[in-house]
Image 1 (tube, chains in turn blue, yellow):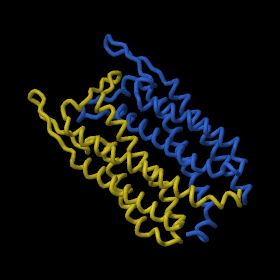
Image 2 (spheres, rainbow over the protein chains, first blue to last red; image 1 turned 60 degrees about the vertical axis):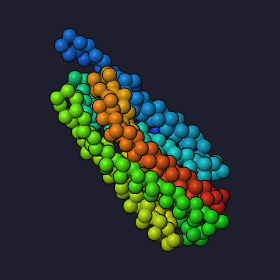
Image 3 (tube, rainbow over the protein chains, first blue to last red; image 1 turned 30 degrees about the vertical axis):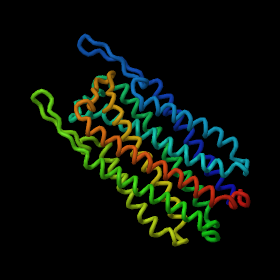
Length: 163
Length: 163
C-alpha cells in the first residue's frame, strides 16, 4: 500500500514537473513581431507583469518539484514537504489564474474599459500562450490531485483517533 | 491541546468569513459613473469577467466557511472538511490572483498592448476595488494559515509511524 502511494505520488510529481517545464519554455519563447500600418510592435511575455509572475512561479514550482522528488524518501521531511506542497499548489493556482485573466483580455478585450484584443495582430504569440497556459493549468490541477491523494491516504487513521 | 486547536481554527474561519463578506459587499457596491468630454461611462464589476469570478468565488468560500463552522464538531467529517479546505484555499487564491491581475492593468494600464489605465476616470471605483481586494487577499492568506496549522497539528504522529 505504501509502495503504491509512493508510486502515485512520484508519477504525479513527474507530470507536474513536465507541465511546469513546458509552461515556462513555451511562455519564454513566445515572442512575435507584428506590422500594423507603418508601426512595428513586438509582443512578448516580459511586457505583462502577470506573465512575468507566471514564469517565475512556474519555474519555482518546477525546481521545488525536483527537490521534492529527491527528498521524498526521507520520512522526517514528509510533513514539511506536505506543507510546502500546499504552498506550491497555491502559488501555481495563483500564477495560472493571473495569467488567464490577462490572456482573456488579450483574446476578447474589454470594451467597457476600452481595451482592444491583441490576438488578431499577434496570432502565433497567442497560440503559444494558450499552450503554455494549458500546461500551467495541468500543473496546478496535478498539485491539487497530489494534495487530495496525500491527505486522503495519510489522514485516515488520525481523525478516527484524534478528533 | 485539542481545545486550543479548535479555538484557533474557529477564529481563523471567522476572520476568513468576515473577509469574504467584506470582499463581496464592497465589490458588488463599487459602481461609479464618469463623464469624460461628452461621453458618460459606468464602471462596475460585472463589466469584467475576472471580477465576476472573484465575487462568485468569494461568496462560495464565505458560504462554505459558515457550513464548515457549523459542521466542524462532527469528527467523521473532519477529513472531508480538510480536503474541502484545500479546494477553497485554491479557489480563493485563484480568484484574488485573477482580480489583482486585472486591477493592475486598470491602475497602470499596459502601454505595449495599448490598454490605458482607467483609475484616473473612476477613482472611487478603484478605491473600493482596492478595499475589496485587500479583504480577498486576507481571506486567501487566512485559509493558507488554517491549512498549515491543521496539517502541522494533525499530521505530527502520522508520518512518524507511517512513512
